Length: 214
Image 1 (tube, rainbow, N blue to C red):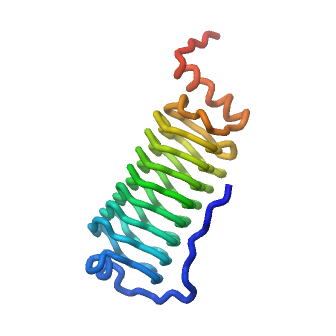
Image 2: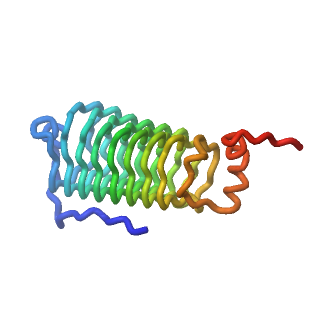
Image 3: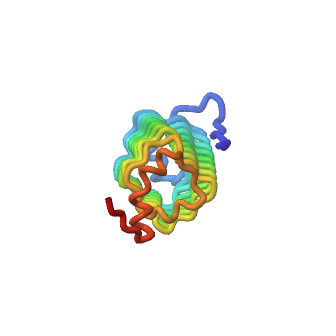
């Protein structure tokens, strides 16, 4: 699977007042932002484009209907950020903490999460296409009623995940560690390894009402 990378202009100017700029114009574009505090910021329908954000703390921000395009986020804190109904295109998120982030009803296309902590993240009713999760930790991650197309979980630790009512097409879980899976019946369209299938057997039996007696 090929995920298209963000396209950023060369020599991005440094923006020293990203919070003020976002509050005033609801837009960040063609800038580099490093080590700034966006904790708890509240903006609806803002946009971030062709920018690089490094070591930015946006914990508990409310950014519903945010549009993110051609953006790189590195070593950021997106803990408990509300991204409800947002749109992400050509985005790379690496080595970032995303615990408790809310992506419900959002659309993510050509997005990479690399080395991220994604526990308690909500992807309910989201649409994911050409998305790569690489070396990520997923625990209590919720994909209820989500649509996943061309999605790869590469070398991830998936401790507990909710897939109930999800729709999958070309979803590859085969290189990841799978723990507790809820909604295993929704794995139609997914690829798993033979070893993973053995581990999934108890959940599959429970799903179809099979009784196992030794």
